[in-house]
Image (cartoon, rainbow, N blue to C red; front, side, top):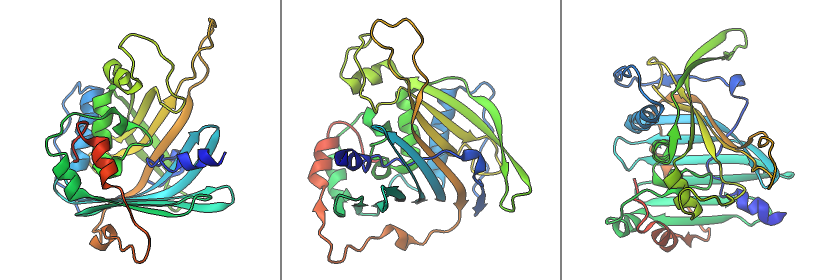
Length: 319
C-alpha cells in the first residue's frame, strides 16, 4: 500500500469537487476587454481560445481544491496557483496540501527564470528536493517539435511546461470536444446570504483516436485494455462572461468509464471521477516576485535536468 501513496505524489495536477459551495471571485487590475466569441464557436475552438486568454494574462493567482481517486484510495487537498509574466516563459508556482493517513503532506513546484524546483514531503517517503536547469533544458530541446499526449494526464508536468494555458492547449490538441453548453452556476457569496450567479460554458471531450493510440501504444481502431488510471474523457467548466477573467477554467474533471466485462452485454458501469481540479478566488492582483524564488539552504538537491532532457527530447517543446 505504501507504494501506491508514493505514486500519488506524481498526481501533481490537483483538483476538487464541492464547486457549488466555493466563492468564485475575480479582482485586481483590469485586463483589456476581449472580443466577443463568434456565433457558432465550436467546443474545440472554445478550449483553444481559453488557452490563449489564460496565456495573455499578466498575473493570475487562485486558490484550489482537489480530489483524486487512485488505485482505490481517495485524496483531497487544497492549494494555490500563481502565474506571472507577459511572455511564453511565465513564472509559475503550485503549492498542494493534503493528508496521507494521519500525517500532513505537501507538494511544491516553482518555475522561476532559470530553475524549476520540485519539493515533495509525502509520508512515509522522506522529503525530497529536485531541480531542473531550464536554460540547459531549453537548449537541449531547441530543435524538438511535437506534442506529448502525456502532458494532459494527471501526472503531466503541466507546471514546468507552462501552467494552466499549457494544460488547456494540451487538452484541445488531444481531445475532441462536443458543442459547448451554456449553463449557470449558483452559489452563496462570502456572507452566506447573497446568491451569486456565474454564467459558464460546460464542455465534454473524448480522446482523439490517433492521440489515444499513441499514448496506449496501440494501432488506431484496435482494442486494448487501457491502464486503470487513464481517463477516457474530460469535462471543462469555463467562465462565460466578459466581466471577469474570460473563459477561465474554473474546473477540470477527468473521468474513466469501467470496461465492460468480457462477454457481458449490459451497459458499462457508472463513470468514475479520477481527478477534479477546481480553482476559485481568482485574482489579477500584483504578485511578489519572490514567490518564484526558492532558497534550498542546506537541503540535498537532486539534479533532475538529465532526466527531463531524456524524457522530452524529440517529444515536446518547453513553453
